[in-house]
Length: 71
Picture 1 (cartoon, rainbow, N blue to C red):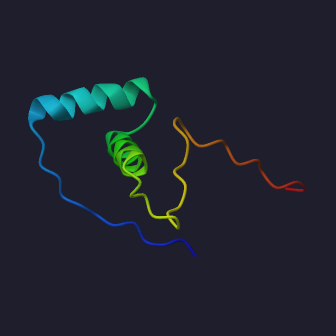
Picture 2 (cartoon, rainbow, N blue to C red):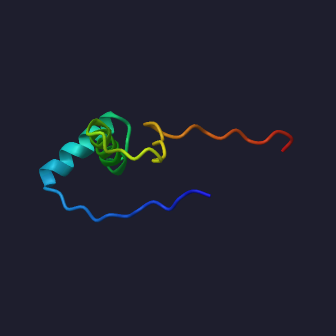
């Protein structure tokens, strides 16, 4: 069973949001995914990323799941 993800309301300057959205697009991530990526990197760089934190999915679309054989 996966842990439920936390929801957070974040207020940003529109120019900061636009820059994040462009950067996210360049990295094939959603804006939300880019924010989480940057927060995790900042936590890791500061030595504050908890050891039990799950891994992030890589950038881009998830791989297509193959259809089960025999159908």
